[in-house]
Length: 454
Image 1 (cartoon, rainbow, N blue to C red):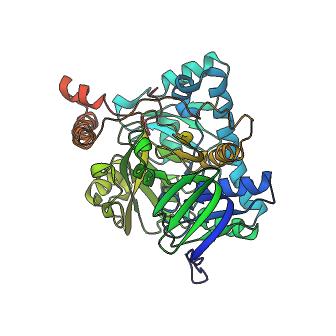
Image 2 (cartoon, rainbow, N blue to C red; image 1 turned 30 degrees about the horizontal axis):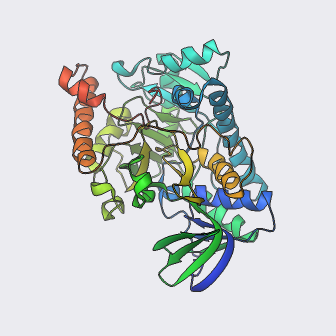
């Protein structure tokens, strides 16, 4: 956070607002900024349990991606026309974040260097083909195909047998972006209270009361921007699965990266279900992440999702397999955090049943940095009762598949995750898993797997 960081004071006593936003991550802060942009006189209060960016917004891998890789899921969810609009808007959002950083003097290490969707073993080759085929049919071409030589050259690893390149994608230092949004929100008149977890939500006639340990906000409307922590609400609980994602960081190895040709290269994700994702930083480090970690027992976000990653050995093995040239490079830091994975891998927006003045956005499924800007527009329009393209967005109030209830979800989730891990270990060795393992693995939600229609 830096020596100059001073947390905003916790809420103490009673206060009023037009809109109360619960959650000071990307979604909550973009929503606050959008509200003030549309209606500058609004009183907006943001309540954050930790500090702004203390949750997933400050702990992700720093990828800013569009929804083009999830186009088939978008089509299934809201039709071709709306899918095209949303995917196009999500690509524009990447550049808008960069422009916002430049215009407001935010030094968040934003770089628009593109993203490679790669195959890291033969079984993954062509994972993008169904998406590419549909986009080609529609005359839309966000991806450039890469052969083995091209994929290896731009990612610094011959492990990548092929891939596709999306030029619009970017990277960012995630915590710096969150702190920057916080600074701008404060400068534009938002009230932020950190160290102020919501302890109770009491909707009433024409108002909402949001209670914290030492105070309460009474507002006309409330927005829940809680990411995985939204599982506390029964009607949201079965719409998302809380699963960990783990990240490791190397020391600065600029010379080695230059030798590999990856110093200023694109970010990379492979095509496995338990996705591997990796990029470089301005100071010459490698950030290497792995999805599909621990599950939230009883649909809870517990202390296991805080601190160092419990999967250090897996991260080390994956890093060294992908980049053999880094075999002697140590890992100097790891962390873990919760992801709110939906069945489709796309977020869900709506209002709580019987509480039409409480709105939510959840289910970003590991791709929330860029889409959170769009989430801010959607949630602001919903909270203001506007009848516009964002309030009518195809991701709002659309029915979707639910996860099973507990304890079936946790037990079944562990079984499916184990099958996926076995299947992918065998594929890395050039072998094919048996039918039972493949069948169990097929039950996984779309999540971070871009080509699944979910």
